[in-house]
Amino acid sequence: MTEIQIDPVGPHIDSEAVERRAVEEVWPEPEPLDSLGVPRFPVDALPSTLANWTNAVSEALQTPVDMPALLGLAACASQISNYGSISPRDGFVEPLNVYVAAVMGPANRKSPVFNATFRQIRELESERIQVRRPTVEMERTRRDILEKRLTRAKKTAANAGNDEAIANASRTAEELSRQLASFPIPELPCHIITDVTSEKLAMLLQSNEERMLVASDEGGLFDVMAGRYGAGMPDFEIYLKAHGGDSVSVQRVGRDPVRLNSPKLTMAFAVQPEVLRTLGSQRRFRGQGLLARFLYAVPPSIIGSRCVVDSPVPMEVQAAYDETIRSLHQLAFHSGPEPPTFTLHLHDLARARLYDFEQWVEGELGNGCLESMHDWGGKLVGAMLRVAGIHHCVTHRGADARNHLVSEDCIEAATRIGRWAIPHAQLAMLMTSQGSYAQATEDAGFILDKLRRVTPVPAEVSQREIQRMCNQRFDNEKPRLEEAISRLQDGNYLGPTQSGRSGSKKYQVSPRLQ
Image (cartoon, rainbow, N blue to C red; front, side, top):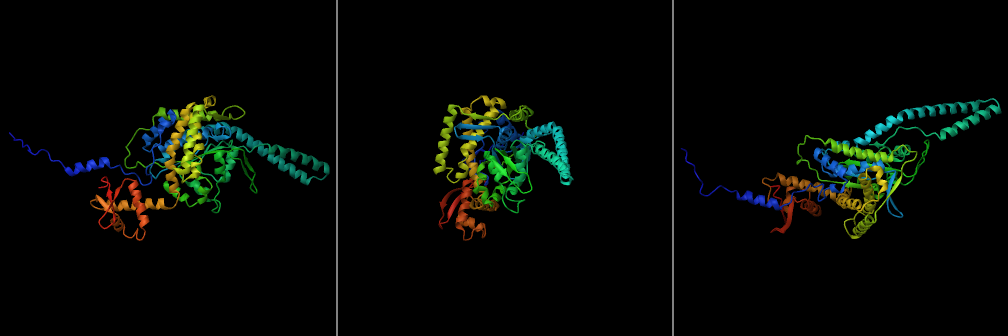
């Protein structure tokens, strides 16, 4: 029989491991350097159908909820933007289109999110093309015949041998010219595009009831705006005008004029951080207000902590989202002779809630979180009114939205989204600054990489030791080094400052790195 040996001292306890676990429990989880301190999108502020779809897409594709939430709002807006507006009081009217940009690094599954978001809009476009194609082809044939008859009449008038023949041919040519002038150039419907020049966009708006969705999971369109096809001269006035429905008149030599009464453009992008940093080189983008027109989402990446999920978005959830898009589409495109334009108005309690938010925003513009970005903050109330209008139309399933006042709940949901949007916009604007933020982020990453290479990772480190381990990167640049260290402190990589014996500052190192 084997004798069992019992340790009288009891099981061995690794006191260092226990202490480390205790420290880790109170030391915050480090945050990605590109997305420090930004909140998670308040999904429960969305209408239930959109909220369920956002959560399902986020879970199935293992991507932050911020991206599908913001893109989903833009998809809904694109279907009603040119026919709906919202007015909280006389003289204050906002259209229902939005510009949004989700900013995430590579491998964050932007393309699958885009497909889930805009697939139904592409299908609706295809359906309308199929319906319109026979009519368009017939109209093109009729116009082609008119053009050929006009050419022949002009030639006859020019070559006629007597005054009577000249007069008859001229009358025929003039009548054909009048018919052609009133005969629009037939075009197939276009609802969604990914890349376009400014001139072509104006033409597309003119031929598509002054409404269009630009949606891309790349940033190439910003290169076009910056002058890719214009000898380096930026050209983005149409994007400024079409955000607020301002009239546009384009006159070009050799081309027919383009006149737009109240164009409404919706834009939705998912771009890499480098695109925003590149935008900083075009000062006019911010100086003329283009960047201030966007709502941004700059969530931290979850790469490295994603689960392997083999189940797609539930069919019933995607179907409910698709049906929402379709119902909003039917609100705008119906069988009547005129578009069903409408203006949403607010319930008294909703107006009071909006007033409180306006007052809060004004205070923040003066001496608060919006003080450094008056351009973006000055448009925040209007942007949230648009979000409230979209929320209202989705909640009331399209056509029924016109028969109800916008509720206090809709305004409350929109203001919650507005408060969420502020730190994301701050981070996005910093990324475009091309200055200290981008440099400090890069420097912080360099220091972090050096710390991780030390074996073992020290429990504390001095500023002098950091400078030494980084070789000559920060020689004679103490402020730059301190800014990079500050970024690491903001991200919970380094702890509070202490004074070393030699006078050099010392910092605790997160035990999660050790």
